[in-house]
Image (cartoon, rainbow, N blue to C red; front, side, top):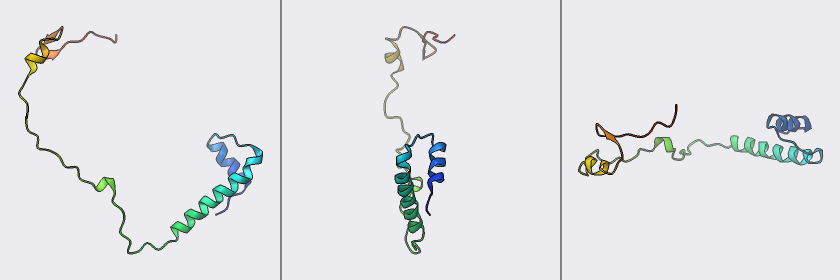
Amino acid sequence: MSLDRSDVERIAHLARLQIDESDIPAYTENLSNILNLIDQMQQTDTTGVAPLANPLDAVQRLRADEVTEPNQREQLQAAAPAVEDGLFLVPKVIE
């Protein structure tokens, strides 16, 4: 697929890019080469080729949900300036 000058100008406008008039032919050639490479890659026969691993197919190993430390709430809250019903109290910052 080859692009012409108006295609590159329209792409630049949509991308909100300012391209110098002297650079448009180079952009036209480079973008056309990229699109031609994509066309070549799409024409490649991939039958019998196994797909690569997909991160969405991966299963994450999880540890068992077990309590491994003793409850230290009272010790940790002893240094807090304000505690109520086992919760830290903080000053209101948003009115």
